[in-house]
Length: 371
Image 1: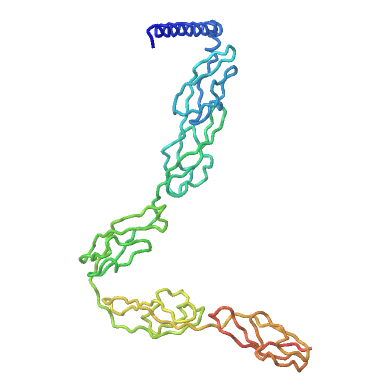
Image 2: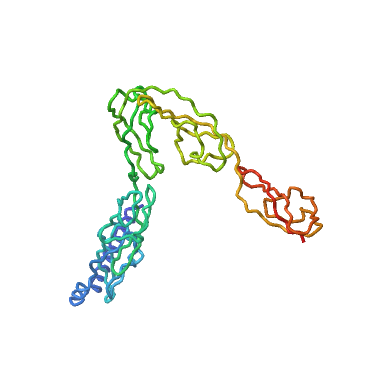
């Protein structure tokens, strides 16, 4: 490029710049409000405008005579932000402050709580305060806020933590010297922290137990130190396990005699179980205070029981065979081919076959009216 061309281009650029500045200045002069208009604008300038983070400017109501330059613009910053509004009386542009509220954050709850028990900032409330917070984790619920005559429903993240289970700490635990902890019983749900450890010397000993709730995902696992009492090992008495017992299906253990007053069933009200060989725990209580109680399984042969039934009645015509005479479900004639050869009410034998395999079949006489 020649020196002459460079000088020409710089001259043209200077001319265009001067012209642009002149036009801008002229626009300002032409659109500048007079003193009365300025007072009017200051008196009506929108103020105290609030909204929720993420809303569009169009949702924020302006005073009469004002409108947003960019109504579809979203509030993407928390706190006080400045936006351009148009004063329609003279089409002038003005900066207007809007405060964007942030949806509540850092909201924590405990499993089992209702939303009504979870606090929100003063200007917020829960849409469904009687709902439960839900299971452990981050859960979404909805809050309500009213601003500028508008009601907003906004999702709020709630972090739900595990709850402390309602438990009773094990107490009055006794162990024998020389035992390991796994040999010492604990209430349901509790385990020993160190089950292979020995219980320790005779006297009070401190050991750690752990409670594992059934719903461990929503409840805390609890660890507690408890004191157990270690006592000297007492003698095991001489005893004889009761011989095999016989019971009928449907009976309870208190119906089954153990043949010795020192033996008793551990679960006295338990049913003996289904037909077949069953085992139930019995306790032997020795006569000596220095002898240890013994728990042993006792064998019970459970036999089938008679079923519950309603004796039916039947009727047929002279000359019919019994298989032609109907009976309710479960009943069959013992001599199905027998002929009804006598008029009147005649007994015939039938078999009842129960559906439950724990009941046995029975034979009963059914009165048949022969016409």
